[in-house]
Length: 254
Ligand code: PEP
Image (cartoon, rainbow, N blue to C red; front, side, top):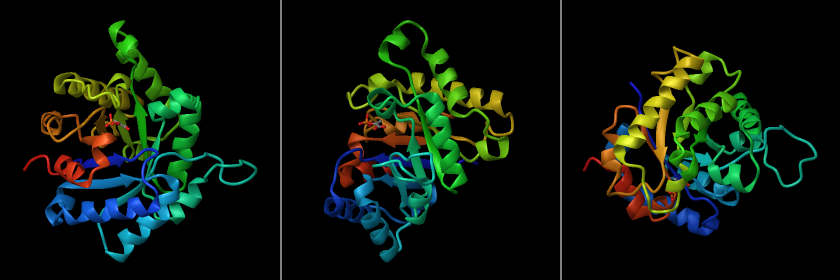
């Protein structure tokens, strides 16, 4: 049985004081049954990780801490970068890797995503590996080819026993931050495709890997998405910035 997972990607929003308020407000709106049903993750900017970790620990919250990016080297002359071991020491459990904004704006290739994914695993954290096609790739009928090659490149050389514990987020680029969501049917069939591709890399891992959908998820569309067999949760950007809205996404079945 795969446990659902809903992760809030706060992107470059919230200073550490705002982040403290956001995680506290979110926790007030959740109860034990929410944590039992769903792994709840927040991914604040780097500068807020320590503050949010402190709140989570002090208040004994079951909210898990995530980071939005990481460098794959473990130490050295990489000015401005953050190493996996630094995140692990902060109690970070999940790291988003290969987000389309990083791929498009910061030149992150599948090879880099692969190196980061391996480094995250090596440091004892769980990668949330993002894949997804552009609008023109979808219009040209290449969405599956794109996702297939991103998965093959990003997950190359990762052993089956490790592969089963990672998280993959299917995020069509045209749906991110645009208010346009893939229909539940399209999102569901692409997540089925993702699981099948994982199966071709490792038959044993396919049923265990958690596959998320991301792209303008909100309280109004989450239930339809979650009804799909191969969607195990969501990677949520804009709708995770307001604790009320994010709590409504998390409590989609109510
Ligand atoms: C994201 O940041 O991964 C994302 C899906 O953003 P949004 O929910 O705002 O589309």
